[in-house]
Length: 287
Ligand SMILES: [Fe+2]
Figure 1 (spheres, rainbow, N blue to C red):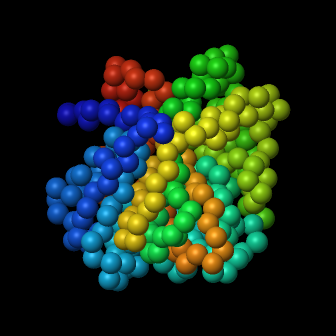
Figure 2: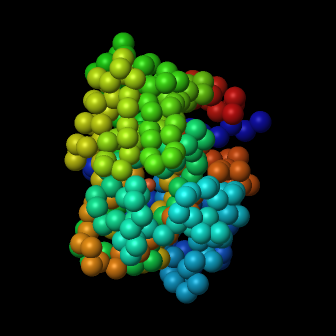
């Protein structure tokens, strides 16, 4: 049996996002080499940006990702195809995605016990000013808090580490899930829309985690252009966006997946807290 090389790496503000951009004609017309390029970038850093040249029929093209990644994840604001409009055209109480406000770093589905594993975001119209996408590495964050609180890091893996609530949705779970040596993240911080309550014993280390994600040196931002599709591992990457003016026509489509598609068996999800090829290979064999 050939064991895949574990190559996922953490990143910080200095990360060259250009390396993760893959130019393609469209989702539905990717060559085999482009399909491999998409998955290799996803594995390497937990995300990839498809730069689609054909912008016609982009709604249907986004749905084409289901061929790789499985079924759309549920969302209270999704249409009948699972797509959620991310724009400020019509506000819905409790949903930052329907406002022009800053959206602090988070993972999607933190209100649910079984969050989606793959998130995608298609840019229809970017904002002229603001509305920048922000990404940060859960692996870098884990390594940081484990160094600062070596005897408390496991508190973030207890099953009642964090409760996240929004309107009628609520979930209490670990911030860092464990599967052998591998970790995954489920994260939301207090952002005006979500109620976020860490367990009392985990409060101090959770606050350090939030500080890490808020520090400019630990995250990078970029502008998604029209036709770009961000695809990210929701268990390894936290994402957010800067605010933009209410009159901006910024318009995005969110379509998340449950990672049951044919491509997912070969994809890396989560992260290894520190580089350990031996442990990594063993963990990979277990999966
Ligand atoms: Fe999100």
